Length: 490
Ligand code: GLN
View 1 (cartoon, rainbow, N blue to C red):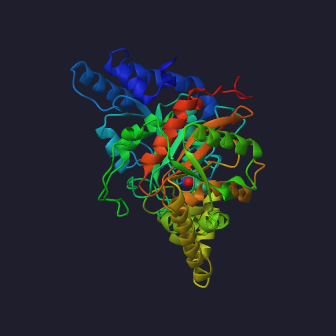
View 2: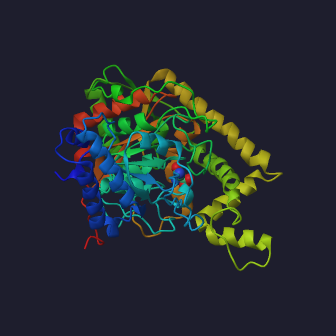
View 3: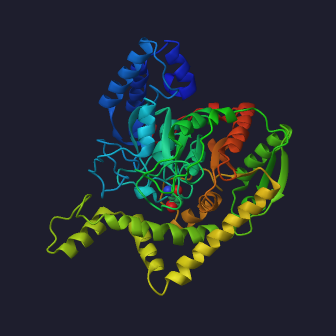
């Protein structure tokens, strides 16, 4: 076993047992990055010098016999829309191509307190808008399971880094599926916590009422470990919840006996690749064997989720992205003849096509005359979607669905934006309702990983972690490694 193939909790044991040092481990990760990064392109920026300095500090602590956290000395990667003091944070956009933050996001402060190692910043769709990582200004990330395929998105770099052994754990952000969908395309575990569990302070805002940071890892135990580090009340985020954070590793119990798992019928119908459906149905059988009770439920407003999302998310994005005007920070056109022209040119040149499309859409639905017809109506439908879940949870303890209707598709630009938007039908409702959702590997189609999604009640990450852990331990899909195959593997 190579060091980069191990999980955070396995490596922690090796650090504590003095079998390896953090410097050795961190160097092993950079060697792996050197080996595969020209094929995968999971990173935008690396930070080797600081990472190794931090690793040496952890080694010194271990040598002195001081106690350390489970994540101490374990190298991870951070999605490039999460602010890191002194380290370039680009959102994979030309607009922020040279932006060096002067402060850390709350999650980064927490992880620093746990003395973890940041290898670098991972690639993503520009401003987290997308499902393929193709809209990155820094080039597409390739899927380590098949280098001709997309890694999903928008946290494609964070998921591909895990699958390719270029990080032990990573952070992503999820507005409509951007942690869960790339996790599923790359055979990883990815969890979007309940809205408000994790502070959004320092996460570059896309759609503030939907955005949430979460981990992407190799197994469920590591997901719980990273959650333990990043969750908790933060005064700097007014939507951060003032609730107790449980020790999520306590939820890692192998037992689903009597647990009621709901299958929303709308998630198993038309539009789901039958091969994906069949893998997920096998997982359902497994749960039955393990003693869970399966119940059918209905989420009748599912069909409106994507269209409503594409009103609400762009509306919020158009307001959030108004700050990039070439005046304060970010890209500026230097040839403009007036201030107004400077703002216009900076924005048209600094943003890519997808970001501009969303700003236009958002500005349109918020303009007077259309606000009631689109935005207000969408907000009402959002309430109906939330109520669907509340009703379904009367009959079950958690929901099980495919994470995505498809497996990773080819990087050939043949998918039009609308078809790609529609594929988020399985993840978007979870953000609309603010619920926790996890994706874990549950099978393969043509050698490509399939993910299943478990959706929990508000603040009930524990139940989905327990169910995910039980399935993982009973099966072992998380132990299969990506082959880095395909034409680019020469
Ligand atoms: N794919 C969705 C979108 O394009 C979700 C993105 C996300 O979760 N950040 O908006």
